[in-house]
Length: 153
Image (cartoon, helix red, strand yellow):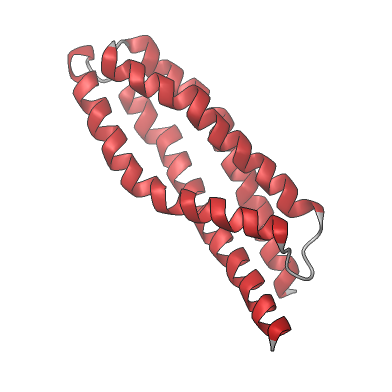
């Protein structure tokens, strides 16, 4: 019974990780191709108020999948499902660290600057500095899909 429960927990964690990651893949590509380019052309006099609303609303959208992704990533590092290659959860965790690191070190400071001292340059920087996050989450998406396929096949 214990092995079955552990196996179920591993598979559940993997599926939740997969779903949360792909939610973030969708969000990050929308942000990269639609939202940030629009922020880069917002009139400077409106940029601060739009940046404040953006931060608040974005938190509601990305908070739950990011939390699920973080918890399930740690779980998968600790307890990898049978059939999943040893290296895959670790590389996926590295891509998550890159995405989160870029969020904290690149995106958040630019959003804060957009609130304090809006300018056209900051909007363009958001688009450019979001590419590492977009690539990292996309790579995570590929890896989580591969891990799920290893368990199902």
